[in-house]
Image (cartoon, rainbow, N blue to C red; front, side):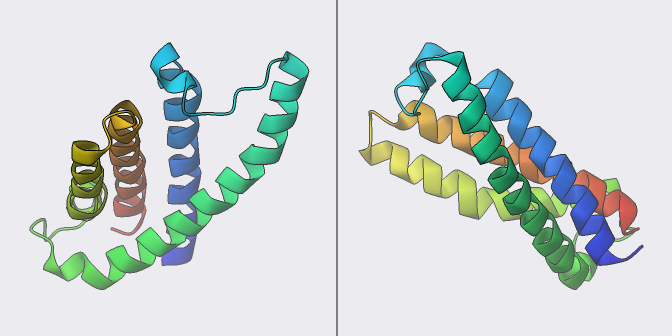
Amino acid sequence: MSWIVAGLIGGVGAFFADYVMWGKVFTGPEMQAFGTFPPTPEEGKKMMAANLPKSAVLALVFGVLFAWFYGQFRGALWVKSGGVLAGMEFATVLWLPTIFLSTLGSGVWYDKVRPLLKATAVSWLVRMNVTGLLVGLLMK
């Protein structure tokens, strides 16, 4: 399968993972201080209507870039046969130094935003592994 198609499908998976993480999982009172939550349901619908397309485009771009990089580095992975495990290995290898260590390092200095940084790190881990799973499966 083409890396572009695999990336677009991976991007759709990343979008849904992102939506679930930020729309359903991280909705507690500790997160309310970091977002702009509209006071009325009508304003909430307007905000979602404006932000969902932006999030979808960013997720599709992420998926395509992820698939391209995965195609370039697939031969250097420990899982040589490709597939789901190779995609998830690549996702985790990208996540560890870039997202996890940067959010962990920032959390040392910024006490008040530590819950947001932890949520961001976990959200990116889920998003990247969903994308890695789909791209690895489709580009086998």
